[in-house]
Image: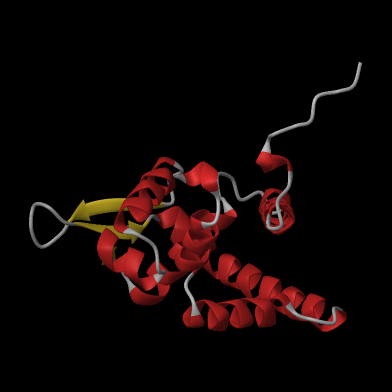
Length: 166
């Protein structure tokens, strides 16, 4: 008996390999932290920790804006960083706002995090020099194409041609 054809569209993805590559690279950065015995630090926390060190305490909104994230996403991240002992929050100007500050632990490691950031950027530059079409160029080219026609509009056009969408 023949196997039925699959109807799962998620089995094919043009961008899944990119997501998996980024995850693998983040895992390697996390391994650097583990080897350095920096506990509880996720690669996704580093930009915010360095930003707080460079600019001082910020509200969640200010921090979110400075790293181009939503307030909601930053609020969740701050909660995770607080649970890891990397930041604390203190009352802001009014009862609704909170200032995010580095803990003493973060202040002790932030220079190391900046060193890792520089090393990672240098390693990425080396990697891009090895390949014929650097990923940073791909991103710029995609951004330019999306300025001509948004991703939303491209998807909407494809859906308009698909009777299953009606």
